[in-house]
Amino acid sequence: MLAAIGEGSAVVSFATAMGSMNHLILAEIATHLGIPVSTLPIRVFESAPFALADLVDGRGEIAVVSAVSAVPALGDGILAPVMVTSPQRLDGALASTPTCVELGVPCVRGTWRGLVGPPGLDRSVVDAWADRLAGAIGTEAWRRFLEGNLWTGTFLGPDEADRFLEAERRQLSNLMEQVGLVTTVGDG
Image (cartoon, rainbow, N blue to C red; front, side, top):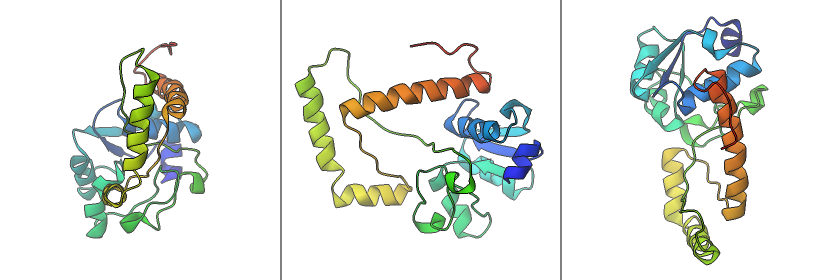
């Protein structure tokens, strides 16, 4: 698969739009392989099931979709997983699927969720929410939720989150520039 992407010959299907996280992941992998993502034959669909159906129908060769979206097709043996962009291997149907890093591609990417507030929010309010969230992620219900969605649990406190968001802004801005969705990466 990596060779086919590197040669620019693989037809890649993904969801949900140009500039989506799936498109940016493809850009990151293609860039590592030395090929502009804009040269790849890609097919964009409004949801992962359509992108996966494109593979089953033989029109696409590789799909870039969320892990949880692929599980039904994997369970039926219709499709085979190739790699995941998570920081470590996932559980369940994807337990034996290597990460990009294991395959020599420095791509650790996914989506994240967070809480945000208005500028100038009192630090005591921020800290109170951080404490509540830290408690919630330690529960059995949260662990089951992560497992059921094939998510990797990573909690960042307010200061860590600020640093993460700044690094994420820079990385995603550069990827957006690579796929031609922005022409200049700004500071804010």
